[in-house]
Length: 156
Image (cartoon, rainbow, N blue to C red; front, side):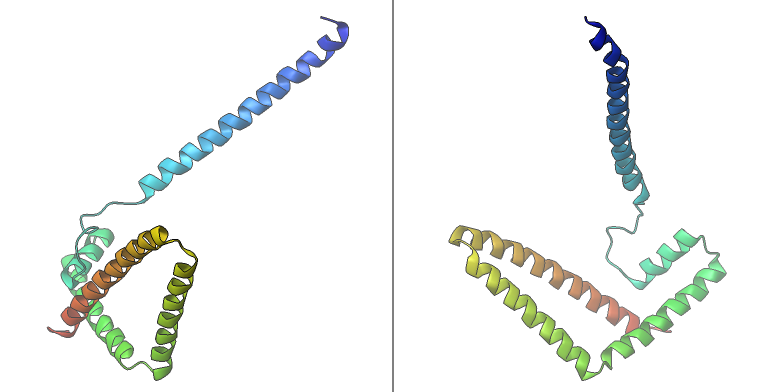
């Protein structure tokens, strides 16, 4: 080794340690973010069940650790305010209905435009994707309708 290369050796070692530290830091940061997001999503016993008023009241009671008296009051409040919200939604102005129709036409136009640039094989895949999304939307709408019927019946 020459004297010139010996002079750069400490700098190269320091640079190697800095690069190693940065790489290790990025790796540990990503690992921490991954596990913190996994743990922050709390799984509850209500997560995969259809939404009902009793389930909603039970969820609030469990998460907020409500006393039986508080649970009864929250149950009354949930039913009361959900009924008011449904009445508001049913009496929506025609502008809102027109807005929703325009949104549906926009969605249909987007789908037709995408189909126009796809190959026949891609159209089949795209149609499957759309069918799956439409089924999910229908299922959610059906659950929402059942929930709304439950809200409107029974005592407030």
